[in-house]
Length: 401
Length: 179
Image (cartoon, rainbow over all chains, first blue to last red):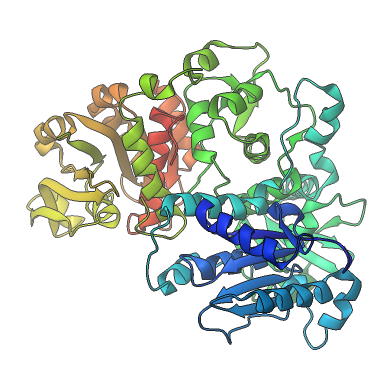
């Protein structure tokens, strides 16, 4: 991206009507100054922080895209949270917005070193957790926007952390299969699996080291993991193939000083997260798209990260065996949601694939091609409303739905 | 006006009253009385008829939450309360007695209702007693012929935990429904 090209701008929390008005506004700045784009490829984000859930959107965007410039509009400027965030006072004028875009151009990679003066946005500086409930409680009032739609949007955005952004592929095209699968053994996920097997063999905890030293201590007997790094750092380690840079060793007496004072977390939750991070919406190599999946046991979703649509996927699988391909089709969700959830369940040994294809469940549950409202179960409308409310509770918001 | 109900069942002390209160948007209605039998060793007050709470939806409709009395001598209430219910949330206390036996007993007691609807199981007090594990409960469910059922560790005081149980049981009933 250079100063001469059109800026790609994504927005968060704008409804269709507001977006239409905003696009007209942008067109008045100049035909090539800026265009609306998808979040994944944008150069700059735009958020109305006075909007419902605005602070949450801001925090979430910064978590997902720590190095992306943001333009925020507010009636009460003066709270610029970081050097990459540019405030524009309301009402937004053409000159002020043009100036903000010019600032964005200066912040983009070709001149990013200038921005870094004084403040360095490192991985460790990104918050590990978004204080959803606190942020939502800080929002003083509700707008007329559909809160459930906003919450779904938020859930999908946050889910990027766990399921990546891989677009759906043509499952019938063998050429795309190279992007659908990953090899867990080549990732931290595989190292942890081997380390846990080794720890059980020798009856003592193990440590996992990367090039910077001890990253994790694992105690399968106590069911606890002791990360020495932040969740962001572990995530970064888990997302890329280890390429021989990660090793394991048994815990020795000299490690006691390192272990002292470390926060712990359930081992199962670490394995779950690491599998999601490695998968990023892909399947473990060797998985069949058309063999039925059998859910042996539900994941403990009150104590594990809940990937998008996990409940519906598990609900479907608990009704009977159905293939991954049919799961995607029947639920109408992105492939990466199903594949990431399967990968995490597989890592914990909660699913298996059967050898014999079964079409019965898919046929029984397939959404009707025409007039779904007429054939939907009588309580689906009620469930839809209730699920909206429950989604709010899951994300820390009490009154949605 | 339809009367949509979600039922919370399970043994004394498992957290039914607490869970109903956690999920409810209104102050819960309780029918507690001083415990007069073995229950007094578990807690001084116990539910004798029902607990009641309600979730208010945006369109003005209400989901009624009913907690059943845990004591078997009030089991006549179980059938009354489950009549017309949408789903069952079964809470089991992991820290007391024989939790797997309790699960088996309540699955049997509510089997007719479960067969017509669905059940999700919340295991409480896992912080006090880690065993049995969730896999042990699933094995018991398999033995009892209920197949794969959502079984979560829950803190009945936490609205999020209780709502996740409800979300899970709805997903079993109709996985195509979404918010």
